[in-house]
Image (cartoon, rainbow, N blue to C red; front, side, top):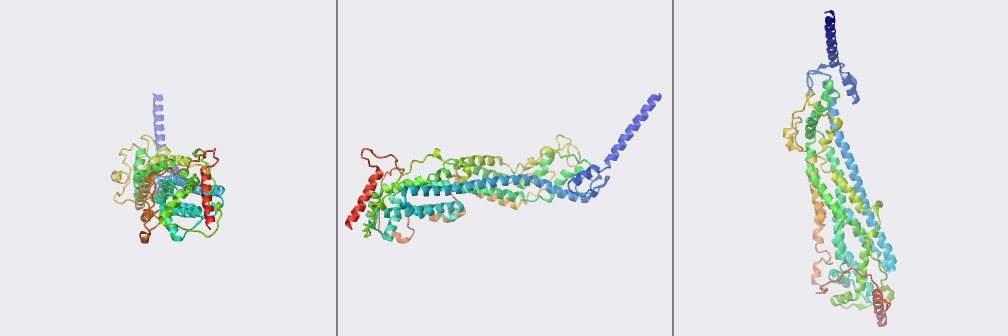
Length: 552
């Protein structure tokens, strides 16, 4: 009996001691003081023991380790806490695409520079002084291409520039191959006006115009798209959280402090509802963002294929040489058409050497397999392969931001989590992304009638850029600047825009119904006679020069 009595007394004492310890702990705010001060706040803001929380505005009232002053400071911390992950992810994204933009832009610029240097070196070796005396024409050609790449059609009308280039080249070559004649400015204007009808360079100008237009529009539009991404990300990521969002975030993150449960994390679904309410406007950017990325990926495919800037610019010296050789080998036919249409010119009184009339040399065929790596030691294929991976990775970036917040150590698994009022299961349904869905958000008060102006403006910017990208995919430039220049480009190549052209001599330059392939065969002539096609042409030109000298 004594033993039973002793056990009862001991049991009562144990229960009393445990109860007393629990009560003492519940009134102790030491853990809160440590956690609060770790955020950089003054530990003296936290009461040593729980106080009456009737004055609290956000967290549950009753026993609390929080004061109104602490609520205000923790609200400021909450604003930072929900903004920091967005800023971190956005900063990484900005850095990634800023680098890609620099890589592509540098690559395209160096390709242009390398192409110009390659042409200069090869033409000096091939044509000698004949080229050197006319090098300015080709220098201006590349300068215009560079200006078009940088500024688009607001700086250069590509069609008109190319037409002027071929007309100027024809004029210079026509004088060279007909050095025995004198030509007035009016006569050469007649020649230039009908460059397209004469087709002195074969089909090279037409093909090169198509290739250059597609490649340049695709390249500069793609680079423009890469440049736009960091701008959009920076502007969207700086959008401030609303007061109701900050309040909801404070309740989710720090109200457990007030009940002394500093280690208690929010339930995942609770976290999702809060963050989807806070980032509702950003989520609305997702549709146009994804459309923009799809258009960028489509244009990247074009850059790898038919609109490959590198495959157009690398062999451009060979293409221009083909055009020159075509003109040289057909100079007699071209001259006869001109003489028939513009009139017979007068013989020149000045004596010239027959060497001045002869172009010599020919390039070896261009081999794509021998393509060098150019800018930054890379190639366009490698650049596009890399950027396509990055573009695919950031699809649905804005709509998945809430999910990136509500994972890992930020939340508590199962039902042992903070549901906004206590440590218990979160019962509410998870709402969808976007502003319209927030009408039923149980945790964040969102005014769905007032979309964020900054984000709406960026949606419009992305939509416009997407339309340019889609146009570039089809080889068209529909930028505003191009629209302003379009009327001038429709008739480019005619060589005459003034009404007076209609009153000039009525000239008809007949063209063959089946034009030959513009590519000049690089096969030597019959070796038995020891004379190549080029040699034959040179002899013919020398004969003309000697005839002219004899007549003088």
